Length: 371
Ligand code: MG
Image (cartoon, rainbow, N blue to C red):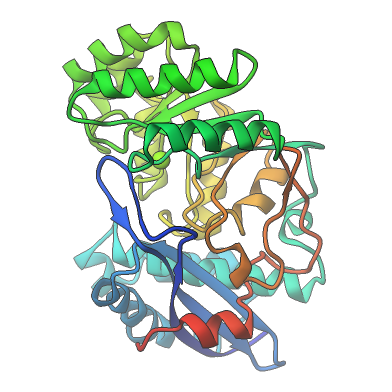
């Protein structure tokens, strides 16, 4: 499994609508930016991060992969996963300029490709390489029905269709208007439309401050919300701990945290109830496993954020015993040889060898961007 080459790629996949917004982001495409690793014996591994498809920034990730990391790994044995992961993260000139951000997500893309290679070499799906599945039914919760930019009437129709036609029992709605009363009204309208049997979570994408969140939660508690995700600025441990102590609505976060140490700090402060690591934000699958075990050891559930839109996380979620559900956003699934599949509100278990990250030739031809 000697590594022969590592080449970056940038793919910009269009969404299923013109654009979407949450409280802090507006996007038209999802970026799939990563590494294709080829071994001397001809195996191909794919790993990537998820971006807002901003070409100038995506090129920085691609250059970090090709110019800083690839030379460290050419000729190495792809089976030596942990050692190679540490080699990337401890490389002094890169670590000096960034222990979080572009440098870690670039390392993560390579780490995912190495796991993909190892699962392909073993001829098993990643969840089996990791030790086998621990859940029979992996619940899918639908995020693609509740964007902040979706008009209320259309959001209600989409939520009802997701429940009544597609069989989802779990929905997530974006919140974070300048006037939180608008959010209370939108969430209450969806609750009324889908009834009490459907789980509704909300996601603020870090928009509000602590007093706004406290007032909002006091009004939202009667709506039976499953969690409030990213209520405040992503690094604010004290604020999240204070909010967690002041409301009965559980707090979820993690999609913007770059390291095991950041997760440990939030968990130790009692600032998070649902832990949401993402292989595309952390330094790949290797660090995701560390975070999932750390959460499990503290008795906290793990519900991955799908910056990979679920391709890798479906494997990790079937495997890890702290996980029973996974986010569902279907934007990029058709770019992959084995796309994620959801039926009756539950994920189907992937069966092809690898980590689910192999792009189709058609997707590369149609959506590649110049490096
Ligand atoms: Mg979120």
